[in-house]
Image (cartoon, one colour):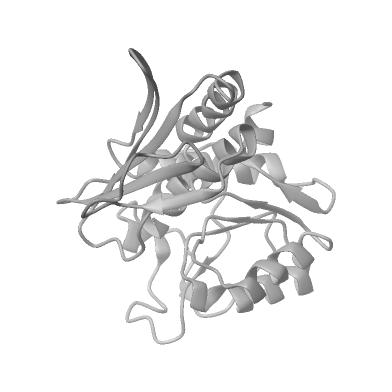
Length: 249
């Protein structure tokens, strides 16, 4: 994702790559970020600290990195776009506190299409809240993905539960669980090949159903969404923002 962010930002006339930040001990520290991304020299070395002045920081990393990320952006006053999921309660609280000091946009999925699908799922959920509808969420990702279900699937579930009132989030089924209750949302995680990500939300009544499906064909959709978010966030006042704000939803 870092390489695609650099490549796509370089191709965008509105953006300039001012810094490239990675973990201590990364084997390519000191190399030109443009060379690493395959777009030629940019004069921006991959570094283990963020020393340049920037208009916004875009983060696709790991929970182990976010404490330092939040501290650095708050200290320097940099707007932050972050897509990192899997945070513990303390890190979530720290993210919330950071948003009181800087503009911060967090989304478990930066795809504009995914976030539009979330809005459509909210509309469907509210319309079907009292219409005897079952809800199941199916997600597919590549074999290397470590968390399951995806943070995006959980976000879909949160949105729908808020709209429809389900209180049980069931992750897969086996054996004889009995008749399906209406107060649950079912999640099913599929891990295959190099699939960059797809989600299907099923709203099913007796005799009819609606499916909302969104698929990524490559990872550029996530990078493009994050760069659109960075453009949106630069110059904004402190607060917590979402991709829905970028889309004007």
